Each structure stands twice: as structure tokens, then as C-alpha cells.
Image (cartoon, rainbow, N blue to C red; front, side, top):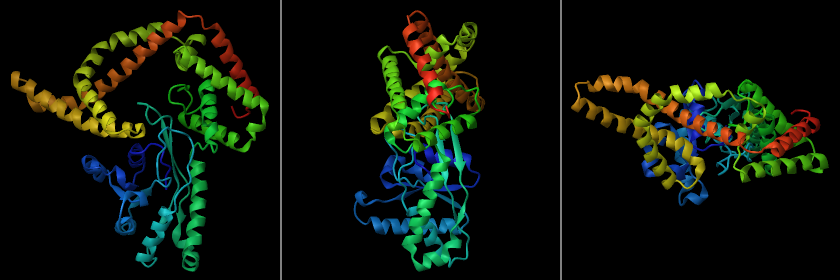
Length: 402
């Protein structure tokens, strides 16, 4: 049982981080015709809801039978128990559904309780699922053997399914950053951005180990959840100050990390220029191999899918296909007009294309940051810097876990 923070990205992360082969259950409405091959290839199974049309119970019954066979065969099945993904990424767990526990007990009934079946909480913690190169921590809770609840299930199945679902929800919360009040999620994120200790994708100190930043994020959320901060005038004033501060940055088109690098004298201009200069030729190679399929993928996915939360994972999968097709055609053309062999070009391309593509993407990102820092250095930022310093002092004074 897992949280569902990033739509299609979640099963990819789970499959990559867990050793056993995993099957996934996901909403049936994402099984559009052109995506079905990708979804079936990723071992995804549809789950039907009432709003999906007629015969949902019948369709789900067939899917549940398939799930039972998977579990009885000793393979793993993951259910994203929140049921849906927020359009905007937030660090919190939504109420979970009872389907996963019900599927487990159904499988036990069909095998006459002869097979041991476990349920386990899984937490996926992204710095930002839409940020290329962002961090992710996958945390597993303690497995619970459903066979131990045979008597309770036979006595009152609805009761034990409800109780175990509640137990698993608590376990899932323990695996992730879980800010219970959605109106305080921005407050939590702002603290991490100012202190640079947490799981924010951009405004963070990467020299701090990832697990330490993950624990910082969780501990900060726990403090927000357990303290009655809305009744604390000083903390609420701090919250307002941070909102005003980040609104001012947005108004002046200044970003937090370039600003921090300038006011804290973290810049190494010689290294920045050397990076941009020496990697420029490799960046051009990356553009040659990747730019056209990248733009085709970007325009197609963003045009076909209105919900941004789907973009990252779909772009990744579709982009691999288009990049492969584009470069195969390119290599065929080169081998036709030159004596270079196609298979030699193809083998070299397997290594060169992804590496140069990533370098090109990072080069562009570093160039933009370089330009932004130069612009900040030419501006009068004394008032903003003073306000940032004051906010950081207030965070340290008022929030013990910060």
C-alpha cells in the first residue's frame, strides 16, 4: 500500500527501488488506447470506479481475480491506496481506501488460507516529481501477515478490514512527510527553503545527506502537526513574513537559490565559467541527438494531457521512444551517405545519446542560474537580504526542530 504523490511516476519509482517484480493497480481512466501498451508493459492493472461507467463491479471482480492469482503465485501487488493524485504536489497523505486489504483477504479465501499473504506500507518521498534530477526516498513499513487475522475476518470481515486499513494508514504516514493541514503545507515548504535543510528540489543544501534532509522534512511536519501553531501569534507572524518574502521574490523575478548564493558569497565564478566553456561542445552534441525528439514529446504530451501531474512520467517513457526512433533514422542516414557502419553508430549512440542529453539539459540550467546570479549582483538587494536574515533567525528561535 503506497501513497500516490506523482501519478505514473510512482509505479516506475517503486519498480526501480524494490527487488521483487511488482504489479500495480491504477485508475482505469488512464488506460487510453495509445497508452495501453506502455501501461500493460509496466504491469499495471486497471481499477474501476463508479464514475467510470457501467459494469464497474463486474470489471473489478475480474481484476480482483487476477490480483488473487498474482498474490497466490508469490508475486507482489501494489495499490496506490489514496486513489488519486493531487494536481499540485503536496507533502501529505490523503485518506486511504480499503481495497488493498480486501484484495489480500480475497486471495486468502481463494487459496483456503494456505498461502501467507502480507500487507506493507510504502512511502514515496519526492523532492519534486516534476523536477529533472530531483531526489526521492522510498521507505517501507513493517509487513503485516493477514493470515494472523483469520478468526477476526471470519467473524466480522468489514470490521477487521476497516481496522487494518486504519493501521496501515498510520504506518504510511510514518514513511512520508505528512503535513496534516493542507493550509500549512506552504509554511512547511517555506521553512525548508529558507533553512536549506529539507527535501525541496532546488532550495536545499545538497552537501547534507539525503536521508538527513528527509528526516528533517518529516520531523518538521510532525512538529507542525502536534503544535497548535495557529494559536501561536509569533509563529503566524513568521508565516505571514515568509509569504510576503517569497511574494516579493516572485514580483522582482528573483529566485531563492541564486539569491542565497550571492548574499552568502557561495559563488565560484571561475568554476562556473569553466563548466559552461568546456562542456559547451558536449552540450551541442546533446542538442543534436535529443532536442527534436524532446520538443516533439513535450508538445504532444502537454497538448494531450491537461493535468500537469501526468507530464513527467509520460514524457520520460514517450521521450525514450521518440528519441530512439529519431536517432535510428539519423544513424541510417549517416551510414547511407558515409562509410560509417550503422551498428557501430548505434552502439556508440547507446552511451553517447543519454549522457550528452543530460549534460545539455544541465548546461542550460547552469547557464540560466549563472545569468540570474549576475543580474542579482548588479541589483540592490540589501533590503531583501536583511529580511531573509531576519526570517532565518526567527525560524531558529521559534521552531526547535529547524
